[in-house]
Length: 357
Image 1 (cartoon, one colour):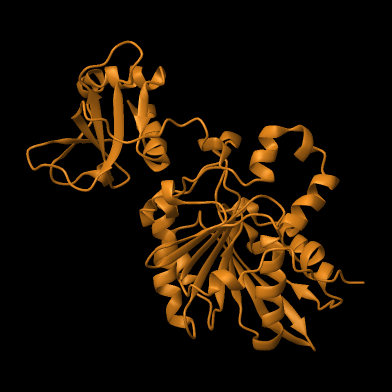
Image 2 (cartoon, helix red, strand yellow):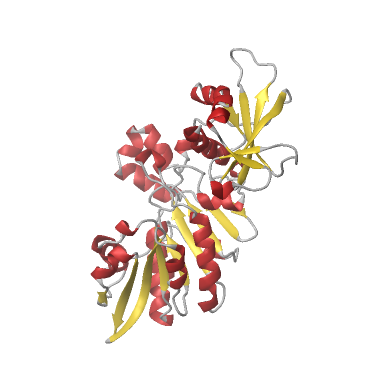
């Protein structure tokens, strides 16, 4: 018998009220973001309008029978007594695009198309679905500590897909993302210019084309989980991430504002962003050596260092071996944790820069 829905798990209706094409919900574990998306936003409306969705994965190897059956067995069949047959082609798993069909009253309907972000952009754009309803990506924010990586040009691929696919959508095409906030750094936040210092738990952060909800647990659900899972009681770090929804990977990053006694030392260009590295002019052994922040513009007479031909624009130059030597003081300061940052986006890009110096 199906489990009855309650009113203590996540409801996607509230974020829909902002009427934005890009919608991100990040929260602690277990508020039911994924389950409520699949059952209440995807499956139940599909039975009425038969409009298919796209389900994103980051890598093609994620497309497995286990992934598909888990959607039905642990979510849809959990909350419904329906047992409509479904079908898909196992041979297309390796191609990064898989269609999953639902058979209702002997009629086969395209239920959702799985698309991998790791395939070529051209194939992503060609994966458009006729009469598409929306798209969904789960576990969007990764945990780099576990060895996970974002795809190259990930935000650009998503924007290109949106621009192409919206032509087949009757009404506004919406991209939905669910995630746990291992960190507040991710390609979409960086691309949108999200001020991560203004993200607040329990609140909505609204931009021109996006809305981000940092959701918290319903108090009744929180109490229930504390009783059921001993990890939440006896593992404080895990509790902070899984139950409180705190971005634990960012907790030790040294954030601040640019002090008055710092002057611009050099400029880096990385992933199309200008990063100003400011040097402390009056430091002692206990002070920070450098401060890093994004720059909106760079003086015409100043040359910016970059690491890739794709970042080459007027006023930039590729970093040479001699230049790497000149940046030795900065690399040493990074190694000794004597650098502070404007926000987490700057920090994570500078970490990548550090690896290239």
